[in-house]
Amino acid sequence: MIELRRKKMMQELQLIARAQSHSNAVALRSGDVEHTYSELLDRSATVAVTLLNGTADLNESRIAYLVPAGADYITVQWAIWRAGGVVVPLSLSAAEPELEYALTDSAARCVVTIRGLADKVRGLCDRHNVRLLVVEDVSDAGGGTLPIIEPHRRAMILYTSGTTSTPKGVVTSHLNILAQIESLVEAWKWQASDSIPLFLPLHHIHGIINVMSCALWSGATIETYPHFDADAILNRVAAGAYSVFMAVPTIYVKLLQTLHGMAEDERGDVVSGFVGMRLMVSGSAALPATVHNEWTALTGQALLERYGMTEIGMALSNPYDGERRPGSVGVALPGVDVRLMSESGVPIDVEDEAGEIQVRGPCVFVEYWNRPDVTAASFDDGWFRTGDIAVRETGYLRIMGRQSVDIIKSGGYKLSALEIESVLLQHPSIQECAVVGISDDTWGEAVAAAAVLHDNEQLSNIDLKTWCDDRLSRYKIPKQLCIVDSLPRNAMGKVTKPDVRKLF
Image (tube, rainbow, N blue to C red):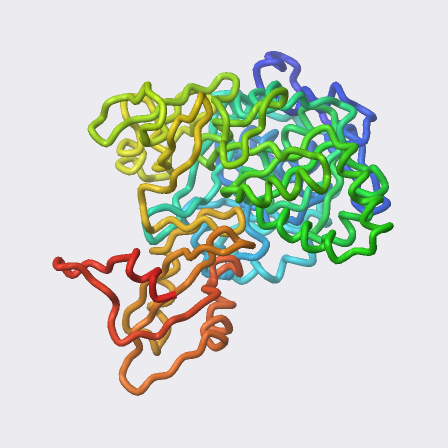
């Protein structure tokens, strides 16, 4: 059994200490297979010793991992933290250039994966001289000592799209993660008796913190799915398997479509399952009021809308007890300070005046990885500038939009139009292009591209999608393509994105 130092236990890796207190409770269910907290802890300690490879501490070395939702994912995440490393979760749907960017930008020392995905990263690891560790190949190597991890140390890098052509690595510490978890556990009244399905991507803060980490902190049970499977999930809902449910607006739209297509008796069992839940949350994108109202009318559940982002975790939420107002993201969460700032740099204290949401508190990230200038520019006297515009209406905040026209919110993801444009410009037929988000009932915003082609070239939307398959994640690939003779520009020659949207 691996020896663990107990000194300062309550000051380091509190998530692990909490898991130890839950012991033989079921932490995870995948199909018919269950895993207790003790099993995950023991296995993660073994993997941690393997990662250390004879050293005393990884000392914040970045360890990337490409692992689907399930016991291996939690095992690897905990193992990296327990060995003193910084986790860099990789997207399962990422194309090779995107994976390579994350590995090289973070200077990852090792990639951990499963046998079924090893070939996807083996070539990259060979090319960049990065250690490749396959989880199934890790065996109990006997005793070992794991380092003490102080809470101020870096814990995670998540890559997020912004107003640059390349994603930025958002660095959070163990203290940041702890603050994000404790705030949500208090606000949403997480408890050990809870059970929740997990089908959200685990390279995104919504799945990692809001679902997985809050559940594991509380001693609850997570039921994992490799991807969103409406039929399988609704069967479990009908069986009364869940007390908490979290999804993005796109999924609620798809669930409504599926429910309306069911026979009445079958739909009744599913609706009863939703009625019996204590909490249903929607986030990562704006939820149309029509969807909110339709869901409440069908299930009796008033969806709880909240607001957050990779850099801050969650900052705002409609109340657990009290009015859940459609179209609103509520009020500041416990331990989080939120203010609205005018364009002239004056805090807004009145109702119905729009301003930028700025956030302060222990939940706010440490830095953008290796981008000190961008980090400094993102703060205003200690307040993080979110770039989102909101207005206060009788105490609740309502999101008005982004300051930047180059941010697209599609299916729960925040996408950079500039990043997508930089890839499309590599297409041999495209001379110029502009990417925008256009309103879409299912996705919130759909990615659309207007392109000027080189002389005598032709390009269809289907051909572009095929070309993008190996270069962009599926959710970044344009759903619409408009071929134009020239892009709309202003007097200064700058492409005017509002006019580009009108093309669609």
